Amino acid sequence: MPQIEVEVAVDGSVVVKTTGYKGKSCQDATKQLEAALGVVKSDEKTAEYYQTATSSQQQRQ
Amino acid sequence: MSHVVTIKAELKDLAAVKAACQRLGWQFCEGQTTFEWWGRWENDYDRSDAAYQNGIKPEEYGKCDHAIKVPGAKYEIGLVKRGNAYIPVYDNWMSGGLKGLTAENGLGGFVQAYGVEKAKAELRRRGLVAREIKEKDGRIRLVATAR
Image (cartoon, rainbow over all chains, first blue to last red; front, side, top):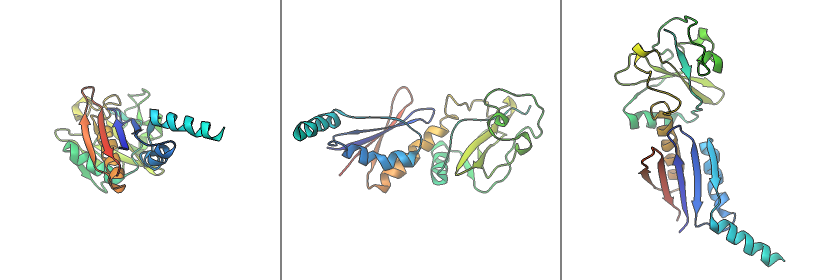
């Protein structure tokens, strides 16, 4: 099931992480959240992101 | 002494600031335009976190747009508006009771509390309810499941 995780460090820095989204939909899911929080340190792309990206490329070839 | 400092934090959402204060048991004083400090600039503090090294002039010390009272502390935190964000400013001289608030501890957990409350509000706005998990190293994780 798609999940959004926000991690806030003691110094206030924020990391947004998504799991279970397919392809770039994870970026769409977190884009607005990241913009709203404004202090995002980094985000992590999950295995699902790369798996789907790879399969899309294969389909195009 | 006039050890007025600031930390690198841009607090853009006043509702989240209020929620962070409530979370920590601090008192948000909306519209309070002065904050308690030593009272006069003694030119006795010039480290990199000195407020005047970060865009707040000594003649502006003690002035703010909103203030925060920390229980047990004589001095207060001022929130000074710069652009569309508020910057926390305070005098960390030991007798004022705010010396323990540092950049490393996120102003005693205040900046972290702000981040958590802001994130929770943004997740709520998207119809998500977050489960809060506090890690041993102090990080707070919010886990929200999308529909």
